[in-house]
Picture 1 (spheres, chains in turn purple, orange, red, blue):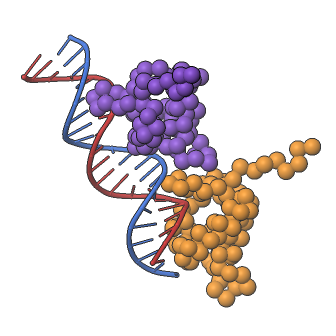
Picture 2 (picture 1 turned 90 degrees about the horizontal axis):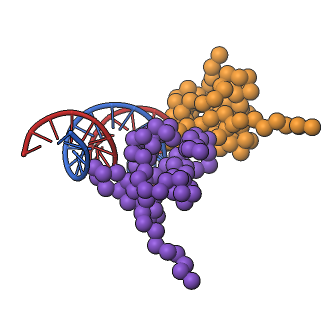
Picture 3 (picture 1 turned 90 degrees about the vertical axis):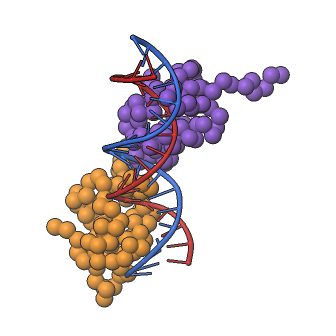
Amino acid sequence: MGVSPVDPLGADFAYVQVANNIAVRIEAGEITHKLPSERSLAEEYGVAYQTVRHAMKVLRERGLIITRQGRGTFVAPRRDPAPG
Amino acid sequence: MGVSPVDPLGADFAYVQVANNIAVRIEAGEITHKLPSERSLAEEYGVAYQTVRHAMKVLRERGLIITRQGRGTFVAPRRDPAPG
DNA sequence: GGCGATTTGTACGTATGTATT
DNA sequence: CAATACATACGTACAAATCGC
């Protein structure tokens, strides 16, 4: 498996497609710790760097990832949703 | 070939004339993938931007084109009409 | 501490569609 | 029909932070 390149004719915006795909990869356990760099993700998905930035912003706001300048982007530690 | 400029005295509204002409250009194979931008089409046809917008709306509702913000307008992939 | 490589952060210009006045 | 503001997208360049040597 890998990325599903962004579909220019898709219903969602490119940055939404990227965000959703990365979210799936995280929730599927395909990405467990460190994400690829934003620029390599841009190449993978065939979109511009700024589009990946936008997608990352969405995922940050979802609490799914944590970004640190100079270090990289990491999967956020999950809180147990329903411990009972 | 190219555009047939809109006739202000024509029987149809300007946006209908534009829509029909673009439809012909698509069905004739003159436009196969990406359409010119709405702004340049407005210049080509000598009409206002909003008139082209209106024409595009008609073509979208006909299922002839697909429009994506920030990317452009594309000829819709044709569904096979009668597969059996 | 310096230096280079890597990575995120910021800024700018251009193109395009969307929406409003 | 004209003008304006806005959102998305691409491309480029440079700055800032981090890490390994």
